Length: 409
Image 1 (cartoon, one colour):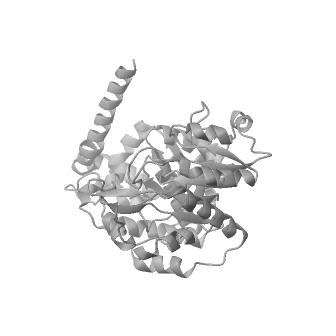
Image 2 (tube, one colour):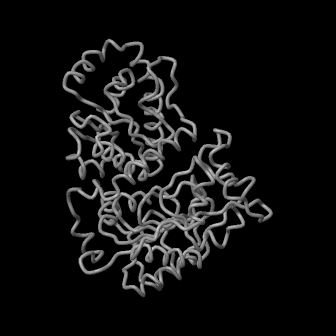
Image 3 (tube, helix red, strand yellow):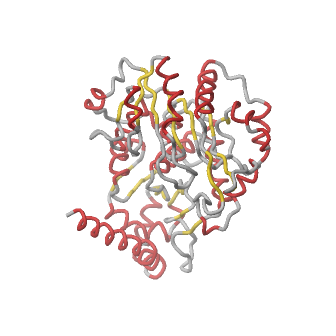
């Protein structure tokens, strides 16, 4: 039965891809007269479709947050009727019921998504691109020769993220996604939100995108002990396998519980106080839900997570013989590779070096010092940001980490 379901998913995914990349563009530009009445109606009703929001935790959260901050800052027409139509995927099915009140109309429906796709491909004037992914599925060019999806350059994409970070920093006390509907009593019974201070921990067990090496759970132990000494209840989040040694520290295994869902991820982060998260889009759940964040082990050294109370300890890149790569050279490995290499770590010619246990512990302590008093960026933190004009100025990199590795400037 499992193999049959997997086979059906493969077929459906192939059909979906074919429709989005071939059929919908053909309908949009060869049979556009079919959609002209709908376009005129949308224009007359002042409707605007939100597009290019990707189906990934980090993208759904950050891209909707990006839209809401644009609206708050009145960078877009606040009087338009914004419409969000998503395919019926599990993230959207969980997300939209919590937040449909933030839009004129929002629904998770594959039928409506496929029905409206040619319309918004043909008429970009009734769309708003909210995407922060390099893949642009819905808004390309008003040209029948376009290919779908269009992949933007890393330089273009970095500018999109930079604009979002600047928008976030202008509205740093505004957290629109905190206003969601509905609770889960079972989750409240599983985790004592009412009486406990909650610290979330998360690891990465696969090498993908900004992850250069698997997380060694042992490197978290000193920081976990530190958090427990401050009275925090620790909760293991994400979808990775629960490390057995975490049992000795009473870390609650939410990630493998039958309560785990994207809805409950949102509820968990909305009630948490602090989080230690490895390189992953899940970190935007901390950033966008006002959780103090220690962000670890992303090799994208000039792409920290945005947030006023956030510390970043990046992964370092080393040559295969163990010699470290300079900070700026490390960034250039990401920003200037062959575009076919996409987001992946170049593990054939380099290796990743994750944060050590003492780097994580001291960065965690720095985070709590920052919570008590923000004394601004240090000399080394400013120096790091000055290295790359293409980098994003979000959270600060750990001062201890920079002192230890200042030979890499």
